[in-house]
Image (cartoon, rainbow, N blue to C red):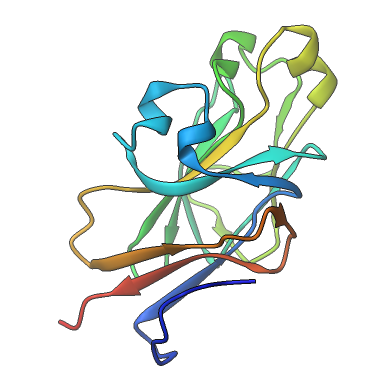
Length: 167
């Protein structure tokens, strides 16, 4: 499933589980240049098969888009940030079809439901449900980010690996 470099598993490794079920895409396949061009950071995207986002790791919800509920920022216990952005241009729905299950400041466990969304509402608005999962650039603790080549994401399976620097 993974074609990752052969590195010893250690405390320097953070493994993120897939936060949605669906088809895994590269960021180049995301129909938004902010994501597809890698401007924000490295990651993968998922074309979801159901409207449920779960925590890819234990952490704290740092920020959730309160009005639109379409995106959130999660902080792993090491301080690494993970952005989950449901859909492309879904901010225009102003929260219609999106339901937050957590609030900023909440501690979450791997697999805990973070938000739910209605795929039909997104489709009826003519928008894409493709969901980028991004490790934002500029995080000094990160040595490298490795991405799964698996084309079907499965919740509870390793999806992105983050190697931390030795400090």
